[in-house]
Length: 118
Image (cartoon, rainbow, N blue to C red; front, side):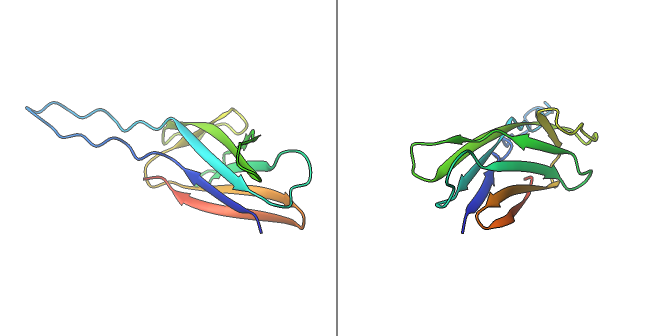
């Protein structure tokens, strides 16, 4: 059975000194890993969805040096504004839920992973 996961670095914490404001948290990329031992040919199909507004982005995957492992990344922007699907960047904010869906072909099924943005 294939495995799927996503990782997004937590925003950098800061401490306020002399009333200097902390910079806003910065999120850059969402990294996705798929492990599928029965993928015969091609690359896995992965789509990431924002659960707040159903914005979705297709992620281009690439084989890694580890057998059966594929990785891809998706640019993310911290914003509460509804993003545009298939723009190449997913709009997220702290506390948002995203869903990563891998369309497995053998057997045909959608493998889903939900993640809460820290």
